[in-house]
Image (cartoon, rainbow, N blue to C red; front, top):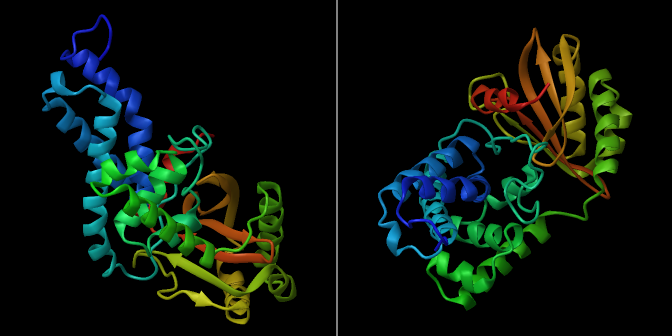
Length: 298
């Protein structure tokens, strides 16, 4: 309860909500991999908060977090069905993290594009348990309350998610090394330099192009160093001569925004381990690109 404030004023309710808002968005975004859907969750949480008997709520932030998290899980369950009919590879909707590097969290965990992509393979409850524990540093007891499960099960859910990520990702590099290798890759991709591309890509590299069926993006992932490098070389003369590139930040890491004729056509993010580039992620779907571009500061 707030000392000196009537517990049920709309002013106080608004202050409580705005204070919690970055965290609510950060949880929902990580659970859903979509800024638009996360915003829907935040708005629905606000509506429910207005219609709640707030005189009975002792901890507004805890209440709001629980509501938003459960709404995000419900939406994630229906989103999984929708994504089964998505045309081509699905990638998370990118977010600009220059203003808030941790996107409302205690730690910038479960925020990189590649991590969100890998977490998509988990069920929504496993994913949420991992997000609450690893990014927001909630104790297992609180995680179990939010998820309406036992503390032992909450620990199992987080452990399962950690094992999944550990099996899928090698040791990461520093942000500076990430930028350097992305620069080398970009130069080689633009010039179609096959030998350099083969040098920087790992043997089992995967290239994902998310066009949402709207642009001429590859409808299936391209897998393996020989296939990806040759695909990039064939792609170079048609794609890069008319393109302008801008270095940006997406989901906490350096990325490249590619434009043509003044219009953004792709955001390139990469996942880099100590062995080289493991994943190329080309977000080309205008519905995902446009909000990201609009959020950038010149």
